[in-house]
Length: 303
Image 1 (tube, rainbow, N blue to C red):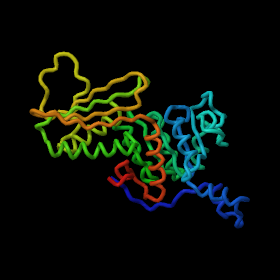
Image 2: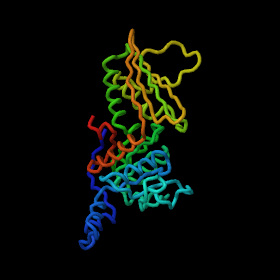
Image 3: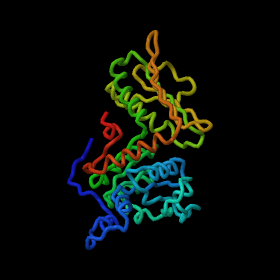
Image 4: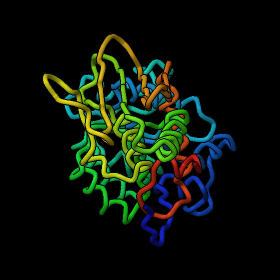
């Protein structure tokens, strides 16, 4: 899973200067020097629900500092203070559309955007030798494969869901599927707010993959997505997916194991987006001393 290469931690010129790289100069206040020693984080998609939550999370952390916030060219928020528009107070970090400039200041980039943008950001983060934490969902196999070259030069941590609970659920799903085998039909049911644009969710696919791994089968060959019409009897060993969209549901996932005479349901409900933001920041910090390569939240959490 991990491609190991020699790696030198990336530091911006500003950070080297603060550490005494220019004639031994340090900041005027020790507390300011301590802050510049913290990993600098850039948030992409700053105006989105997750972008705003990530800005708040980084600003509230005593283990990281916000050094950049990115939005698409022409967005109304360009030039505005990232903390103020996110409702977290003044950050002194204006939102920009210049990814190259923003990433040059970063030790990590946290990215919950769109697949095409994420592929571009991966190359730029690799050039900056910044850890790239990817929470973007809906990526095709081809788009995921395009992350490979970037991972030869920097750490990429990608997961369909960044929460501790969901990743524990993923581990449990694999173990239960392995234990029960083909005698139990597996269905993955997920629910999200009406703004979500992809289905099944990245988390549902992650859970389905875990079940397929437990069964020892290829998910692409056994996935049934959204049955409709006269479908015929259920195929033994297939894994079903069902997506619900409505209201302001943050995220709910069930993995149903239906067997003869009994049913087992593994369930996770997210009631606050902060669980995803906290997990993403944890991943960004975890990746600081790791060798270039592709990782996931199971690696981060040591599961």
